[in-house]
Length: 315
Figure 1 (cartoon, rainbow, N blue to C red):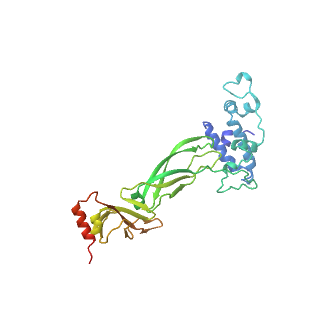
Figure 2 (spheres, helix red, strand yellow):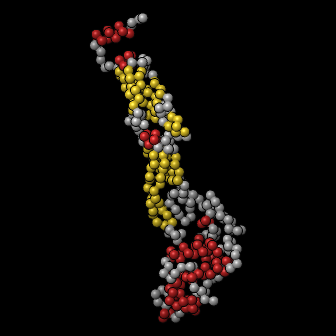
Figure 3 (tube, rainbow, N blue to C red):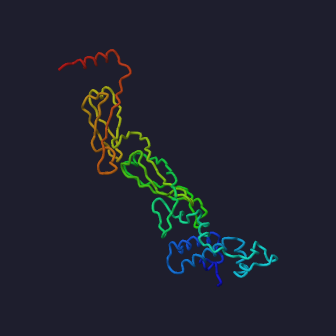
């Protein structure tokens, strides 16, 4: 019975080496007897093995392309053995499983399709060796306080190694990852992109993990869900009262009137004026105003006397 190896692999005669590998990979998995119980699948699997055994070898392929199956099986005289053609008689070893295992590598032909997440079942053939996943790749994601207050979307370009269609070679390709920053995210929040690391034939790509790092803000210090604002005041203001203007992250101007005498540990707490809560952005932490009390560097004798008189006054 005459075989058309190109027709068996469902490719044309201009197919590249990568095309041949891709076709065999697809069809061999489809017709493997452990996976396909339909009549004729075993015979088809054997035909695929022979076709690939010939077309993947440059010498055998050159002979077949020039002299056909008859020249391949019968051999050709040495004087015609030019351009790398095969001069000996070709006989397929008749073991398609051997061809299959040589293509995918290892004693377990299905190991390349087994992951820790979902082990594929192919009849009675059980995978013996599981792929291992590469360690996570961690990168810092630096965000300003305004981004963490309002939320935003960040686009990050990564370059990674991706397996080509032939399943054997790889190339470097760029990909854009999109991160939707939620209002109220905290320092240390981790965003994971599963299996976006480099691809390889014998490993599971690593997860890429971005870790939120908060940039320093010129006005506020964040403590959990609270915002701390430090106002500089003079001794006169601390003793007589004053007003503090605070520009909030959402663009409002708060004027806070302080009538109490301010001591070094005094704080003014404004409820609901802090950071949004990440799990419930409609609720917010507090705005805490602390005070940096500036004392005069020098005082004249007259002023010292006046202050002494004022502080020693009794009702």
